[in-house]
Image (cartoon, rainbow, N blue to C red; front, side, top):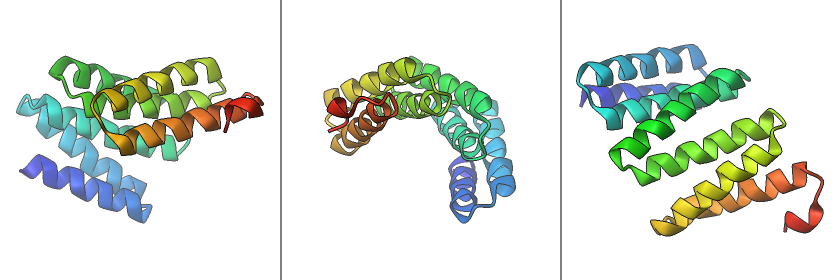
Length: 143
């Protein structure tokens, strides 16, 4: 319960734009999750930390957090978490100009979202695919 509260507080601070407090709370969330060997909460904390780094332009660190989140989610069978991490990794790759890699991540995100029936996540994946194709200057693929 405490871990979820820390994660929620981190998310609130993130929404308020207070990245220092958001990072502090997500880091505490991660520490607690590791202490209790709660891989699901660990994955959630990593997602929060990755989002903070992405928002601050630290794409290499964001990529590390999201990749670790993806690995944990895959290990514990959390398809939603894995799908979310793949989408985030795709966005990081787009920001880094690694468009082919971004397309691969977004296609994996879409495949999982469709397989588990998460229409909202599938919609995000399709939107991100369109943006990535647009970044490749291929307007025929962005519709």
